[in-house]
Length: 187
Image (cartoon, rainbow, N blue to C red):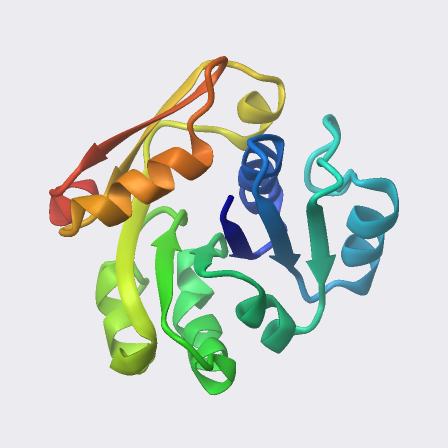
């Protein structure tokens, strides 16, 4: 069982949290909104972002970034790419041990057109960056929550990292993750 910190409890972060939680992993969602965090912890829903579906009880939430980062061995980024650099700067201030970073956000950084892997390598101290995986593909949170068949790719130069993420998210019914070593192509 993995412990996963998801930064961003929007629709995609919550959907990925649901999958990981349903697969038996421990999940901590981070969000800046106390109302969203309370709803996730008390009702196991996030109706503002995902009007349907229920989160597993092993999915928790916090407004405390330090606690969220400390919780998991894997940090999954599910915030808009436009703000990812600022979020990473905040994470770098509180991270205390090496973590595997996973990007689930879409696109390039506005203005610089940098890939998220480049931004992570610039903003996270190398001593705390255990690896990087891009989780990407044609997917919609609303469809995932409804259990519609979704296929995505986990890409990393270190295939063992991609396979680790594949094990966290793949299930037998509706969410399949394939692995590749072509990080550049996937990003």
